[in-house]
Length: 557
Image (cartoon, rainbow, N blue to C red; front, side):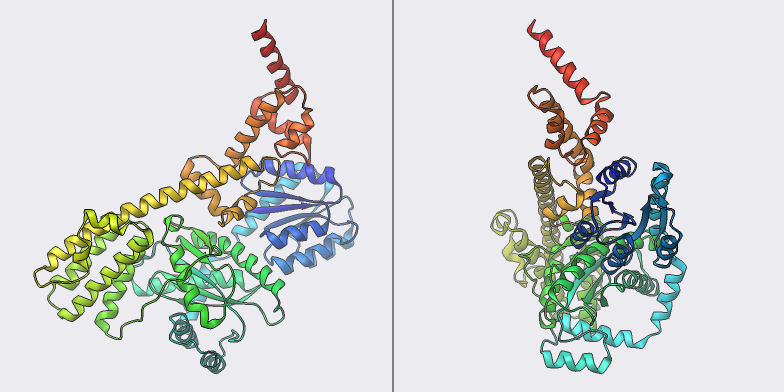
C-alpha cells in the first residue's frame, strides 16, 4: 500500500489525522481533502489504496463517495470516520464492503490500528495455493494457445490489416475488440534463468498472468501473451460500457498504478521479481507491434537495468525494429539463445552474460553438429546484437579506435571462429562498460532532477506521487531507486532540506514563524511544523530563534 487520503469537511480533523499518519507511516503518501470532490479529483490523478472519510459531509456524503471510489479504484480500502454512532450507516457501510467504521471519539490509537489493518488486508488479498491451482487449470485450456498465436502474430507485425485482425478476433471470440485501441504493458521476469524446467517455468508464467488478471479485471479487460522465456505483454482495453477519452485516461492511470501491486504480489507469493514497462497511451492494433518495440527499448537504458523496475513510456519513445522468426528449428534454438544474451546485456548482468556466451560458443561452434550456414546466421545475429546496442549508446567511432569494429562486419576466410569470438568478448566487455557508465550518468541526472525539483517546490506539493510524475517513474520505484543511488531515503532528503531552510529563515527576525512554516511546505497546518521542527532539533522554532539570537549577540559583544 502506498497512498492514503483523509477526507473531512472539518480542516482541523483532517490535518490532525494527516499528521498522525505521517508520523506512524512515513513510507506512505498521505493526502488531505476537505470535501468529497477534492478527494475524487486527487484519485483521478493518483492511485489511492486507502481512504479515511467522514460519513456526514455537505454535498456528497461518505457512502456516495465510497461508491465513486470503487468505480475508480476497485481494490481501494475505505474506513469511515464519524462522530455519530449511527446503526443505519454502519449497516449500509458493511453492505458496501467498507473495511472499518470508527467513531472519532475512539482516539488516535484506533485510527492507527485501522490503517495497519488495511495494510494487512492488502497482504492477504491473494492465496498462493489457489493461484497455483488456477494456473494448472488454465494449462488445460486450448483456446488460450489460439489466442496467443493471434496476438503474437499481430505484435510481431505478421498481421497488420484491420480486416484480417477483425476476422481472427471474431472467429476465436478473443474477448477484445479489433476496432478499439489497445494499451500495452510489457513484463520481464527478472529471475527467469532460475527456472530451468519447462513445466515449472510455464506454471510460473500462468501464476503471474492470474495475479495480473485479478488486479486488472475490475477496471479493464486484458489478454496476455508470452513473447519469450522471460517477457510477456498485456493487451488492455476498456470494457464496452466505458469508451470515451475520459474513461481511457482513468484506465491508463489505473493500469500504471496497479502494476506496482502486481509486482508486490509476485514478490510475496511467487518469490520472483518482475519488471514492467507500460505504454503511455493506447494505439490501433496495426500499430501494436511498433509500440511493443518501444517498450522493449525502455529496458535497454540506465533506469531499465536491475530488478523489479516500473517504467512508463516517455512521450517521445521511439519504436524498435523487429526481426522475423526463422522457420528452421536450429535457427529458432540459436535465436532464442541470442535473445537470452540480449536480455542479459540489456539488464547489465555481466557474469551471467559471459557464462552463456561461452556456452553458446561451445554449443554452436565447437560441437560440429551445426552446418556452416547456420553458424554464419548465428554469428551475424551476434554482430547485429552488439551493433544495435553500440548504435543506441553511441560512440562507434571512438570504439573503432580501440577495437577493429570493421572485422566483425564480415567473416573473412582468414579469421577463425576462435578469433571471431575473442573479438566478440572484447566488444561485449566494452558494451557493458558503456551501459554501466550510462546507467551511472542517468542515475546522477535523475537525482539532480529530483533534488532540484524539491528545492524549487519546497513550499508546494512534494508528495512522492508528484515528484515521480516529474521524472516519469512510478512512486514506489522512484523511492527505491533514489535510496539505492544515494543511500538516503527521499523523504529524509526532503526533511533535511526543509529543516535547513527553516533554520535559515528563523534566523531572520523579520519573518513570523507561521511564514517560515508556509515557506517550507507546512502552510496547511503550522502546528505540524512545530512538531516536525521539535522532533528533529529537540527544541521549538521559537527556542531555536532565541538561541540563534543569543549566539549572534555573544559574537558581537
